[in-house]
Image (cartoon, rainbow, N blue to C red; front, top):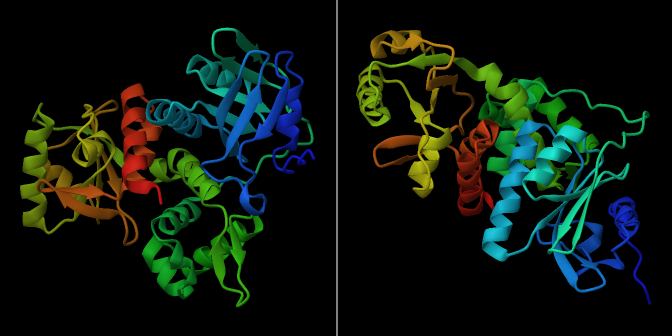
Length: 349
C-alpha cells in the first residue's frame, strides 16, 4: 500500500514528480508525528539508480544570510556523510536560485523553480517561475524579538521562567518578552503543554529566524562602528585590548572568524568583530581606534546575560550562536566552512 505524502511535503514532491527523469519520490523514513527532523531523507528514483537526498524544508524567505547557511550545510553534509541536500522552499527568486545552483544545492519550490544535479546523467535547472501574488511578507522582527530568539536557542527552558527573568536574560523589556513569546506561538515555533506553559516546537525555524534577524536587524542595531587599530597584527591588538579592558573593568568577547579559530582551529580571517559591554567611547580612545568604513575591527554593543561564553587561550569568546550568525553574515566560502564546523561541534543537540 502506498503511503500518502506528508502534507508539508506534498506540494514539493508533486513538483519533483513532474521532472521527466524522476520515476518515483518517497521518504526513506516517514517523519515522526508528521514532523521533519534534521535527518529526514528523501529517495529519488531515476531510470538508472536511486539517489538519497537530505531534506531541508524552509518556511521563511531565503535572504542572503539564510542562503549562506544552506550552502554551508550542503557542503558539510557532502563532506561528512556523502549526502547532498535537497532544499524545499515556498519561493526561490532567480538570483537566489542561480547562487544555490552554482554551489551545487538541489532545490525545488512551490511555483516549480527547480535544480537537480544527480550524478553525471541527470540535471535540470528551471528558474523564473514567480511566486503566487497572494503570498504576503511577514512583518519584519525588531531587535528585541531577535534577542529573544537568541536566548531561546541558547536555553529553550528559559521560556518557562517568569517573564521578568526571561527579559533580563535577553536584555529586553518585559512587554517585549511577553509579546515575543506570543508571536512565536502564533507562528508555530512555540506550543503550549497541558499546563499552558510554553514549549519549543520548531527549533529549526527558530534558528532560521535568528540567522535572518541577526544579519538584517540585530547586527546593524548593535554595531557601534568599524575601526582600524595602530597594530597590523590582530593578535597584537587582542593582547592590548585584553590589557586595556582589564584595567577599565570592561567585559568583551570576540566573534566571527577569530572566535571560530579559537573554537575549531580552522580559519582565521582578517576581520575582528568584538562585543563590548557598556559604553565603548572611552575604550575606543584608550585603544586609539580610528573610524574607517572598511576597517577590520567592528565593535558591537553586548546585550543581555548570554552573549559571553568562555575564555579560550586567554581570549573571551562570544556564544557560539553569535559566532555562527556572524560567520554566516560574512558569507565568505571559508567563513561558511568555519560556520558549519562551529554548528556541528557546538550547536547541534
